[in-house]
Image (cartoon, rainbow, N blue to C red; front, top):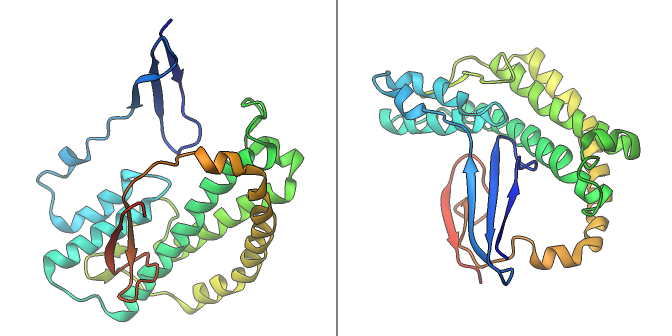
Length: 247
């Protein structure tokens, strides 16, 4: 007998979504649907606005990764103006973008993924979350919170606030990095690196427990895309797009 499997809400993403899987009588999948339950309307919001407001508006697309949207919009405005961002301005942009990567990846890895890795994918969904890790793996939970705070604090020191900063503007940034804030950032790096090393210490060996899942989970032929330097190295702020086929 055909049936529909509904996953609502999807709990391993930041945002709101629902998945519906329509099954045939023989158990094969007839159709699968991903429902995004949010209406944003940013295209309409932007109509008639001056271009220099776009970075600040675009930062508000997301409260988790506002810097990514801020940078992308500011770089589009750079191209529109045909301006070259001064080297210092570009480096400051890179610092905020790296801080964004740290805090966003910390949220994704520790809050959304690590419960599956540390508690097991067969653990009860009701208790397979970051709150359960506080009791079972307190150091991992603390490191996840600390690393996210580390990235967000750098964003706050540079842009004045950690959520939806407007510091990156067309042509560069709106304010310099003070010596006081520079020293504060440098002083927090060693502790953050210790947390990262501890995390890698338990994460790499844990992969040995998931050979079956690695073999089938999201394992399908697809094109790959990434930002790279002229030498082909991984890049996060500037460079060119590389596309690769499944092989």
